[in-house]
Image (cartoon, rainbow over all chains, first blue to last red; front, side, top):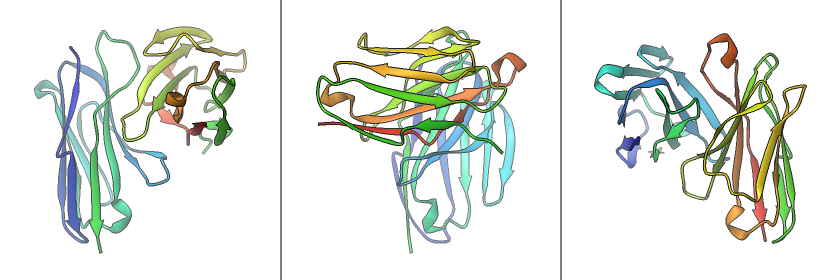
Length: 110
Length: 114
């Protein structure tokens, strides 16, 4: 069946370190977004990236749709980057609703 | 820029009561999605509407119903509330009719059932 996997499930970093989060999906997709859920529960949209590469400040993302994965890069991490990062996709032929991955919980220590 | 508005932001109900959650999409967005996120879980799709018609249905309990009104706002009605309904409820909108699939999420409604 359709599924979204994320790795690693948990990540602990020192402030200033870099990290790479991965999202694998089981079928072809027509939408992929990365979200950061902050400690207050809000889902912050980081990237709309069904394919290609985008950058926004210290964050960048790459989706290789033909190989069914996406990567989120966080450079020079800050304590405010802590939280859960979700990858969400809409699969071709499965409607327009998101299927979320289980998330990566990131803790950035001062 | 205008964002998705959800009300109320917090709601406390007792078991067997009813609750109504409201969602106001971004202006000119024709599609609304509802998601439920239980504690420690990822969001799960409940139901969506496109141009005021139900378009997709996910794991929405029969006790829940929803609709989209002529002004495109949407309401999620929840009856016979159970402790397990305690969750964050997100609404998202997109201008799907314009071919844009990016979904914009509201701040969520935190429902606590006691």
